[in-house]
Image 1 (cartoon, rainbow, N blue to C red):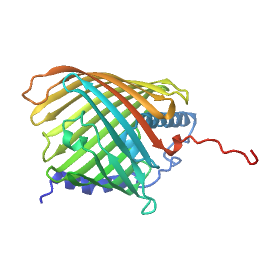
Image 2 (image 1 turned 90 degrees about the horizontal axis):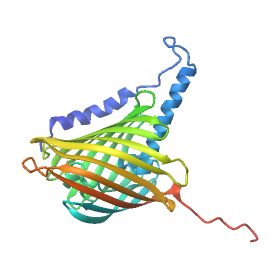
Image 3 (image 1 turned 90 degrees about the vertical axis):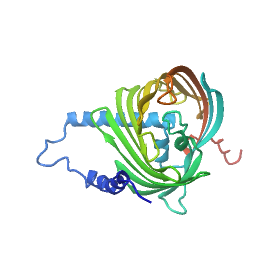
Image 4 (image 1 turned 135 degrees about the vertical axis):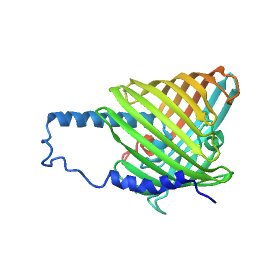
Length: 324
């Protein structure tokens, strides 16, 4: 079996990059730099708050990459209801999350779930239900390397995953993820994603996301760019609500064409309890099914209900006092 050169390059360069990026702590009080004053403290405060807001958004929306790296077990039960002018009505229940296996190893986790497949055209890879094991090889403050072994009815899918994140400027941060996998019948394929986040205010976040998939059986490089504006409409702990406005475009390089232009609004809020969520997402799509197909417009509406099984969201009855 011949391994493509781009796979070897990523596999051997990733650990070195991870180590080089964090070779050791930097002494901020060195003789070449001025002492820390209120300007530095203000910048650090703004940067920390921007990062905290970004993590809150990812946790509230249940971002799969964010959930995969959380320190605790987490399971999400999602009931999806989709109506599309082209595909009509579809409904399905999905399980997504991870379980820690501390008795075997603190570095080992069991993950399960599958993505929708609506974003990129590589539907067979992204939409299947699967499970697998994730082993953390190295984890530092800004980077992480994991080995993965997915398995489903279609066979095993070994891979390696690298993530690096951190601040860019005041109120801005980045997150880069690269994953290389092998699947029988599909060969090697690589998925790269980078998110650039900017906290505009204490209640709004702008995200520019780019994703690319390249493999032995893809249409060249399959890519997608998305711009999202998140607005937190309620900061009350018992009733958080977020409205996001998004626009995206995705396509392929071989043959070269744009598959879909999409614009929409997403409304998400907690429902009745902190672990229950409801989400409504209307959008308009202007898509082509193939390079030779005629472009058509179609409305799409998604209504999703979600249960988050997480230790921090548990509610238990108060224990009776002695003598009661």
